Length: 295
Image 1 (cartoon, helix red, strand yellow):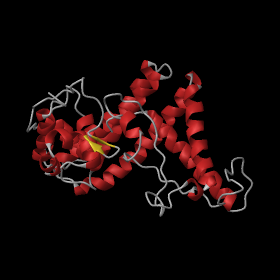
Image 2 (image 1 turned 90 degrees about the horizontal axis):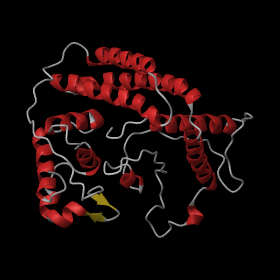
Image 3 (image 1 turned 60 degrees about the horizontal axis):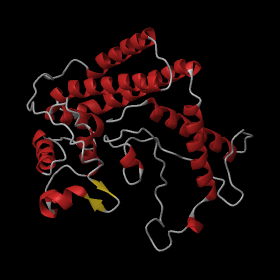
Image 4 (image 1 turned 120 degrees about the vertical axis):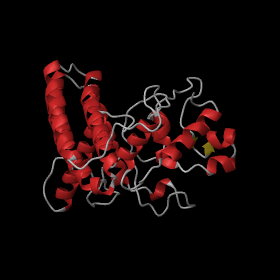
């Protein structure tokens, strides 16, 4: 959620397309894109379209120091990964072909994106916003009343930023932006419901900004900057870890308060990771301040 962009929706749509084509092929139908290799499996692709997932080069490019959007494809479960059998001979050529197709089609589509593509993408974003609102409503009962309105607000901002991201590729006129804003606002009112607490209470108004001289995530490729500079025990004692910690730093933009960063973390990771106490967010950001990553 720290990098809201329509590119993710396009990538997922391509994934759904490959799922459909390969399932129909495996079922005996004639399709334009069976996407199978002679040496590989003939099974359908069963890709899941997910949110943030760390563990590869993309987590450096996507990080807020650079904010380069993209999609990440990974194959899991894999019984051979990180074992002595993890070799090219164990790669299914069919899976590799499909991954290459998804990446190539995404790149081709974005490279040729123009005015005629704006309205179809807006329609896709509206449909996906409706789906995401549905998922949010299902998860709302797991949240405290005051957090429901906060989370609904964050989701609305994310959906609108996805729309605005189109302007990096093609012109988005005021009418299209206004219509999208109204649609998203309507979904937000439906999503947050009536039994909400007071979302205006800001428990921590402290605002951090990134130190521009220190770039990149705190963890990548068996190296941890925060462990190196803060020490193993203090770093291990921080409650925020993994993707939650990764996004906490990404949400530091010189504008959001610590409380608002907590709201964004809840919006992205609840109900799987919930609650996220404000004190835990404060402790993590304070640790980053101590090693001059943020100020």
